[in-house]
Image (cartoon, each protein chain N blue to C red):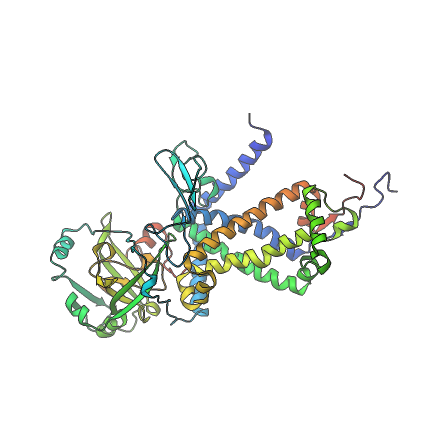
Length: 274
Length: 248
């Protein structure tokens, strides 16, 4: 017989197998894509708008170093970044001047060819996995039932309530925890249907062979260097999602959440717990 | 003091990273990663129009300064003499698996039909520059020499070298006979400057920059790349593991 203030805490089958496989495969793939991408960026740590951009042109973002410090330049602003960007010390105490430090890149040393091989091979895993997951999730109604927000949830009042709940770190409990909250749906949907497709398309737009066959890629992003800039910005939006996602998992019961994403079974948090 | 959690985190991150670096250095893992290159090339060749033209731009789109990259001045004394002489004594050889080997002067090449195109040069490092190129379509040179049966690749031998190894690159016949693939002798309506590859350089517009061999003095048709350099088809392919297929 159940005791005290916890009479029923039903266990729910929350995450289906394709969702769990896609989640963990992508946990690895996205990390490899981000870190190998930073190494590729290190080969020319400047970003431009438009079709062209090279050393004689004006970047909107640049990471570099002077004699004694690392710098991040955005627009007209110069931000000192010694130790992190542009100038940092490696594991054996040597001062390095590549843009992103070795701990953030794959490989952890300057190797453009190697980073491209990691990046362009794992890109296939990302796209093939994404297409499979997308087809299955349309078929099993995961997108329609779990990710798509209901009309009522999108009303400003409802959105505002969810924002306030997040701000106070009050996560849904009991029956309300059966489904994703609206901010959760928007975050997952935004990554799935906006950020990841943007990464793939801007990636395509950097390929000279793809640009020849599909010149609309260049028109879509306003030129190859613009596409490269968008690729970089969206990569950091995905990193931001990752950090918020990890924080939310830690704050909302990491054991239960991890079990849910590994076994599929998730215990609904009790109504009374605080 | 380092907290236990921080220490565990550092060790975990450190082993993940050194694991990646070990993988990066493992020949077997690199061979597996190379599968991605094969897949990209097959997919692009299969799914995309093989004759698709790279975008051509207007004069208003030109980069104010066209950046040069790689060798800016070949080191050999022979090249210096040829350059001082305006390349009057320079010759382009076309040989290998051809019916009629050619030896052409710059004047002869410049008198051949020409193509002018304003295109974007995309470096593997990430930057791009737009320039106006004029040159002879490679197809015309290959037709004049007459490719023999079995020729599958076109190799470009160059007058510049890296640490004593002359630069070389190669493309397959899909790109060699592409209408925008030219041997350029002019950039932005002036004779090709030395840092950009004078007197003759390859433009293969659907490929990254390292394919665009500069200072080309010999074009060789071959059946296989095995006997070229270390067999991977180009200087950077052999020395730094760059992809041979540079369309992406």
